Image 1 (cartoon, rainbow, N blue to C red):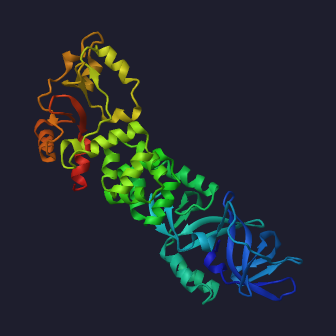
Image 2 (image 1 turned 90 degrees about the vertical axis):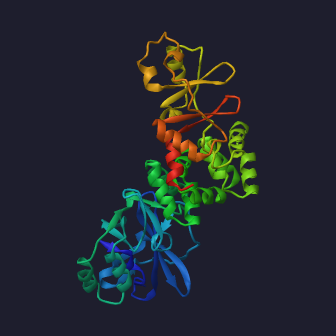
Image 3 (image 1 turned 90 degrees about the horizontal axis):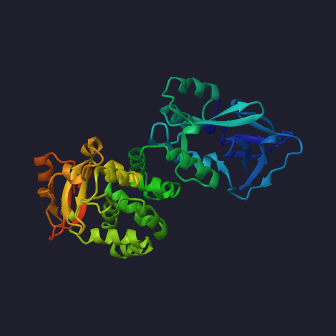
Length: 407
């Protein structure tokens, strides 16, 4: 196994033994994870030589030799679908997609496979830090013996996601890895990153995945991420969120930014959010969602269940209790979903509903909402206007989230 810390600074000699520079970096094909260029610092400038032009590569003997005819070509900088290990990975924050956390890279391990040098893992333990500190100052064998007894924490390269994906291929890999994580784990990662890094990671996610992650994040992180996004991108992400969650985030933004994002959103989505923003934050109207399924009082149980099958699947987890409304949209009652599933299909849905005397108005203070949930052991609570018209629903998750976040 070869470590990047042992490679950097190695003297590079040509085929006749003349020293031509020092190793400055290793360039890796990000698709195959194989070193394809040796970057050499010579006379104050960066040069590159193909890995195939290396005749001898021996960190243990502190020497690199070029093959006969090898030429150091001026290096023009970053290229598509490549990584430079010192510049792009070493000392950078990366995401351990297996451990679901953000870590700092202390060193990088590579392995010789035939004539190729392959990227294997990043080192995040104490051994990597010591190796990095002492490489080039003591004999390689002494350094190896010294670090063998230290913490050898490493992350296989397949489980590494770059915080700053520099190409379409790397960005695709990041998305594929992060998209499999639970939104709560993604939220933890976003909270551990700095402002710039958060922006890069969110940019690598599709709007739906980004919305799920943001919905689990701390409110200050939510606002910071949305404020840093391009307006159109922010609108796309917020459209994937429940209206009440989008309203909570937008309510923490400066007024000019809030209006710009609303203007960029689809008209129907923006209107729902505007209605919620009009309510006091610490009221039932400020907590409720306007995105919910409701049954009509003239439906049968069978008709209600048939309509439920057409509902957006994102609403399913929030449908423990279903509001029932009269044709004029006034609240008739609430029916627990579990009772509907067990009821005969031809019976009126109103036969199984609870006449809703527990509903609150949009102006009801949040503390009274909490009291209702505690007193009646509710899973959901209907919110009406002053005339009894159904305006929204509050779920137990909404209440717990607000309490946990200390709003």
